Amino acid sequence: MSYMLPHLRTGYAVDQAILKEEERVVVLRFGHDENKTCMEMDEVLSKISDDVSKFAVVYLVDTTEVPDFNAMYELYDDCTVMFFYRNKHIMVDFSTGNNNKMTWVTPKQELIDIIEVVYRGAKKGRGLVVSPKDYSTRYRY
Image 1 (cartoon, helix red, strand yellow):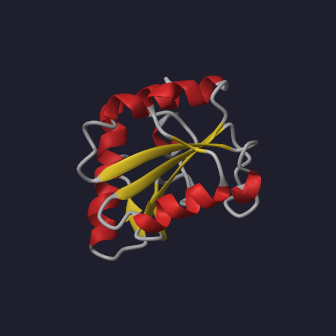
Image 2 (image 1 turned 90 degrees about the horizontal axis):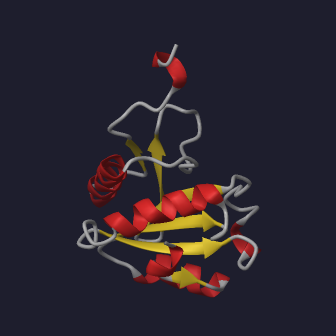
């Protein structure tokens, strides 16, 4: 499903996507199109892209094609989703200990809720927002 979403092919294109968008959240999926986890995330992102188009824009970035951000954002996982608003990285507290990025696939409605929380918090000037759902392993035992 990655063919349904726009790809950013250079570091400059990624920078411009983050810089130029003034009113919406920029959702970047870093990873590889052929990776299974990324395919699942791309499917969810392509399904929600129309639903969140008023307050978010989604782009895909291949980490081997554009290695510029691998060290900066510690992109060592198979699939990583990050959020930006007005050239600022918006962190999300998922209760996992890593507030910088999301490295797992969530259902469609949960991802819409997360992006909406990011948008509302970022619009108020917050750099860290709390996820609507607790993703810690505390309650799984």
